[in-house]
Length: 74
Image (cartoon, rainbow, N blue to C red; front, side, top):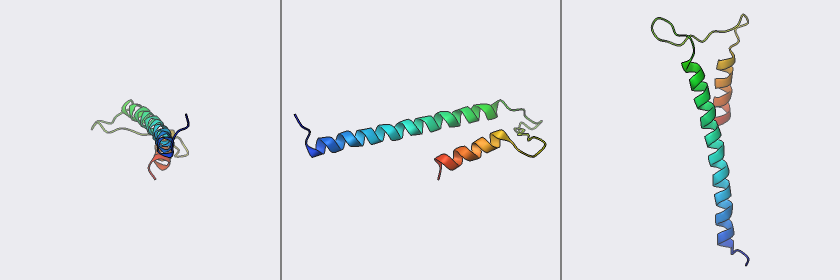
């Protein structure tokens, strides 16, 4: 039995919503991983996180955070 246009539209909407939710869930997982990594960093005497850099001033964690924000919060 063929689907009527309303049913077809609803199924398409469910597919789009599911894809969007999966993308958001993956973004949340990535954010949690970054936060856990930050939580495990060395802290100064006041409890602030020390985010170090290499001799050239590069910091992989800072770069990954910036990339994450650019990708997910436009």
